[in-house]
View (cartoon, rainbow, N blue to C red):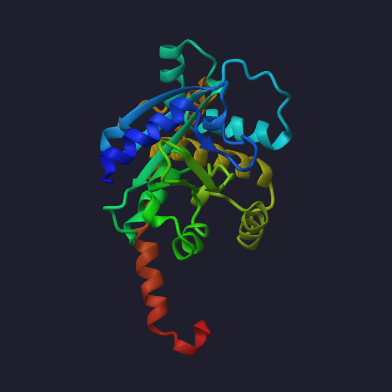
Length: 265
C-alpha cells in the first residue's frame, strides 16, 4: 500500500484500539481510556501525523521518573501544551504529544529516516516510526531498534498493528546538558572560586530558556515563558554585554604562530 493508505489504516487502528502493545499498554496512545487527537501533516507538514494523547482521568501515583518526565515536558513545551489544553479544556500534565513517521511499502528505508527521527526528538522529545508489512523483517528491525524511536509494524491483518520496540526515554535536554563537575573544574582552572553554584544555576536557567526558543522557533510558536523566566531575562538585560574579542582573537592567532605541532600533543 502507499503512504496515504497506510496512514488511513493506522488512524483506524488507533481509533479502534487495535495496536497491540506487548509491554502491557505502557504507551499512552494504546491505552483504551485515553482520548486521541490526530493531526495529519502536523507542524507545517514536518510530520506525517502528530498524536495528542489526553489522559483526563489519570489519577495514578506517578513514580519519580514519571514526575521528572512530566516536569520537563511542561517546562520545555509550555506554549504547545497550553494551546492544546485551552482547546481541549484539560490539564497540561494530562497531555502527551507524539510525532509519527510512516514508511509504506512504496517507501525506502534510507538515510532520511534518522534525520526524521531527530526532527521529532528535537520538537517533542520522542519519535514513533510506523512500518508497512514489507519493512517488518529481521534485518530491518535489527537496524531500527538501534534508533531512538518507538517502532510499530503493520501485521497485514485488517487494521491491526503491533509495537515492535519501545524507546521510552523522553529526550528533553540533549546537547544542552551541562556537566557540573566539568564546569566547576573549568571555573577553578581560571581562578574563579566564589559563587560557582550561583553561576552554574544561572547558566542552567539560560540554557533552558535557549532550549525553549530552539524548540519553538522551528514552527514559529509561542515558547510560553514562565513569569520567573521573564524576570530572569529582565535582570539578564541589565548585565553589561559589550565585549571586544578582536584583540584577544588576534593574540591567540599570534601565539599559535610560534607553537610547534608537538606543543599540542
